[in-house]
Length: 190
Image (tube, rainbow, N blue to C red; front, side, top):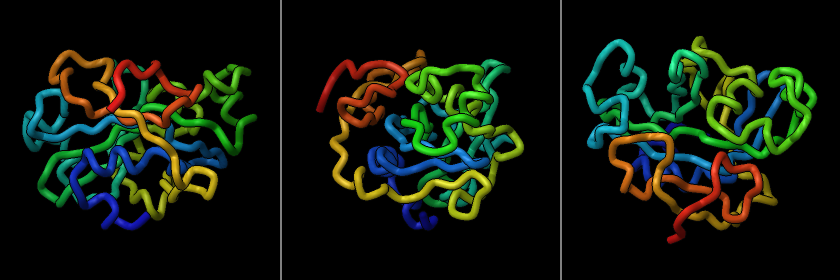
């Protein structure tokens, strides 16, 4: 998808990414869960301002922001809004659709529902690492493609973000309604 898709309010992009496809290293999955983060709120890494760690967040829209969470998992985000604004969409969960055997091998699991049902799980399943930080999501090697035909009219549920302690009241989590591949069930609907 072109950078113009991401050069919009992060909350809009987060909802519209549900149903799109993330591809990397011969594996792919449909995005079923996202969360929006913006430099105006304290749960966003960019809230502290421009630093070496957050530089990608303030860069051009349509880039991958990949960072290490708790020193363990690489997490994938799509940078949004105009350059100079720190905003990104965290890709929280995927429904695997391609390269499932490779995903199982990378994760050491058989159950398809457990392969990508969390932000650290999906990056491990797709083989996404810190060296993918800053890559163009249209050119790759990590790519996000438009919704396939079966996902064009996906109903999206809205909820509060999870796994954070700041700005928890914001309804900035977006999920494919009824998906069995979410990291956690939806608590509220809008």
